[in-house]
Image (tube, rainbow, N blue to C red; front, top):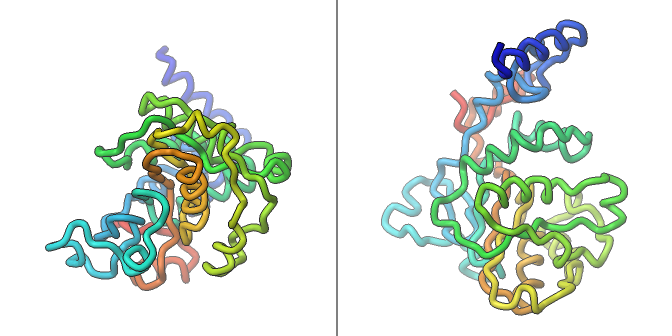
Length: 270
């Protein structure tokens, strides 16, 4: 019997003895390939297909925004360019992807690391080039509480895929800042000033660095990381995040309707 068949039979047996429901739709799981999610929900996770800012990847409301100007930037980037050269935000931060990220990040469901990393790898831009990868760091206090850095877990998979070294001790979080989730954009920027530091500037001198994080909200975190790296002498800094929070005006009506009825869909789902 093939190894795949044995593994599938084992999953079916475990699910029979210990029933598990899909974290998104509540359907009982059998031998679905992604832990905690049924195949139907997982396949509804689709990358952004909107026209987007050429600098921060912010989706534009109209698909014609970049028709005649592929390098068009959003107003915030035009007024005050970020410290990173380019950011790619791959998927909308909506269920079921949102559920999966929260289960990994806050519930310690590490078995979701590989499926989430595969989503990133599948949506990586073909033009991406860098000399090294750096995950957005956690402060030691937060790391002790969580016991892992989800950005580092994802970065390890991307490092293997891209054949790039992962430097995870040079960029550090020097200040135990308040959680960003409860702050406004202005407060997020103020909260992060001086939060990061570079231990060995000589190791990044002139190097193109790829920052990895899980969720992009205002971009304040990756921007402050990039600002710290550039001040320490790095070359271009790029950023890739698995998901991006979505403005309500860009969420299709059908998604809002499904969320109101207790069901979850992602942009791009049929």
